[in-house]
Length: 303
Image 1 (cartoon, rainbow, N blue to C red):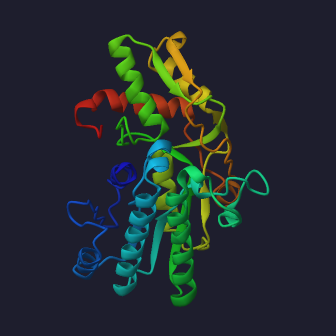
Image 2 (image 1 turned 30 degrees about the vertical axis):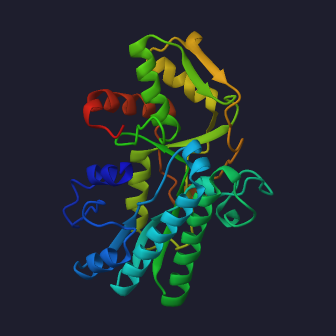
Image 3 (image 1 turned 135 degrees about the vertical axis):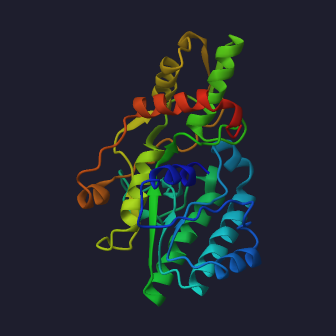
């Protein structure tokens, strides 16, 4: 997946540690026995658990049952494999989209994950990820493990899933814009463009994951990873259109399509208090790098 490949790029100069990257071809994480056998036959000290059944707004809306069931199975199998084979420290990935749809305040912080129900559009995925936070917390309390949940906002970057039917916002937009540019046709954008979102470039997130993993001074409570700047969806569409030289007059907004949650702002106060030297890639620069990668690798991307 995107983050696994990103971390693989980031650790190439690490001479102190050996990294093993797992794919579904090596081990199907939905299969409990395969997972337990794999962990038993290997000797790992740490885990970075990034695997999940994921998708954009409309995939979540249409597949809430499988999104819940598959993610519950994946997380349960991985945690059991870790526990039975002595992996006592690791990173486990949640998402800011699991937060309450109607929180008591904005921006939301790490203490508010379970405050009230998530948005109905992705409640299957959201509740499964909330259970991952509960599971890791209980392992930490019961066995004195050091399992840390990181909570990113909307991720994008090279190696993303650019499938037209079930991708997230940025890769889906990029692929559809590319088709529009080639066909010289109008472009249909979904919703009103008014919802606010925060974005995180994948290489920024990868660096922070590795920093937290090896930092024994950080506590094991969840930590939000984000840039506090947020954008309207329309701003993202317009910025990407400029980067790809798309005529914005050809963009038509289908306001009958769902906007999803209108606002889910979270704060990076805990992260920045701990690591004051973090510099985030701007959205424009991150989109430029992603588009450059998209063009150079189009024949082999997930699409």
